[in-house]
Image 1 (cartoon, rainbow, N blue to C red):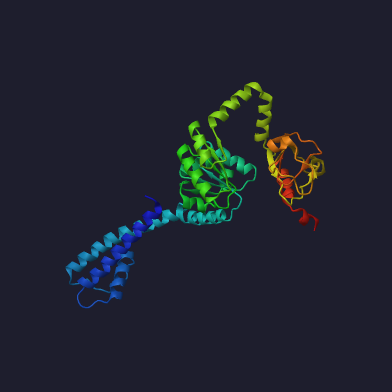
Image 2 (spheres, rainbow, N blue to C red):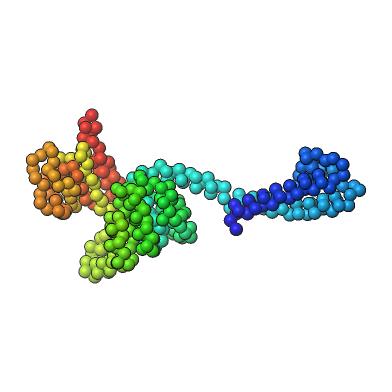
Length: 365
C-alpha cells in the first residue's frame, strides 16, 4: 500500500477509536460527564501519559474493562500512526510532493518546447539529444520504472529532466504539458496504436505543432501521417540503413559517430530560419560571414516561400523552389523564408540563430 494511503488509514483508525472512546465514557461513566471531560479522558488514555483520571473507573467493572480495551487498541493504533508518519517523512514523500509541485510549475512556464511521450529504449536516446542540444523539453512516461532505469544510467540528465508520470493519451495531461504552446511532439511508445491516438489528440489541440511518431508496423505509417504527423520514423528502417552505410561508407559513418559522441563539445547539423524582418534577410551568404563570426559551416539552403521578395526583382532560382541548394555559393541571396542548414557547435549555432531572429529595425536602433 502507498505510504500516503497508510497514513490516511492510520489517522482514520485513530479518529475512530477516539470517537468510540468519547462516546463510551459519556455513556458508561456514572453521573453526568461533559463532552470536554470525555474527550480529555480519551486523549490522555490513548497517549498513555499517565495523568490522573478525570472520569473515575472505580466501582464500575464495565467502564474499567472498556478502558482497558481503549488502552490496548489505542496504543496499537497510536504506534501504527507514528510509524506510518515517520516512514512517510523518512522516505521523502512530503519532499516528493513539493518537488512535483515545483516541477509542474516549471512545466507550465515552458514555451516553444518539445513534448516527448515515452522513455523506453527509443525515447531515452531522444532525451539525450534534446538535452545535449539545449532544447527545452518535457517527458511523459506512464511507467515510473522506465524513469528509474534512465536515472541509473543518466543521472545528470535525469536530474535536469522535466517529466510527468502519466498516460500520454490523456487530453488533460497533454494540456498540462503545454501542448498548445509546444513547438513539437515526439511520441516513441511501443504501440503504434497509442502513437496514432497521441498524434490525433496533439494535432487537434495544436494545428501548428510538429509531430514525429515512432512506427514499427509499416502499414501504420500512412495512417499516422494522415492523422496529422509530420513524419514517422521506423527503427528497423534506420537500423538497416545504418548497417548498409557501415559497409558502403565506413569513414563517413565514423565521422558522424565522432560528431555525435564527442565529449568536449556538441557538434550538430542544425537549421536556422530567417523570418520576414530578420537581420539576415536580403543579404548575401558571404555578407553573413558565418564561418568567421560563428565558426559554423553552411551546408545548404532551402526556400520555403515561392513568391518574389518585395525588395528585389530577382526571381528565385528554380532548384531552391523545389528543394535544397547544397553547398550554396557565397553570392546566394538569403531571403525571408530561407532555411540555412549549418554544421557547428550547438553553442555557436544558438548564437547565430539568435542573431537571425533579431529584427533589422531593432538591430539598427
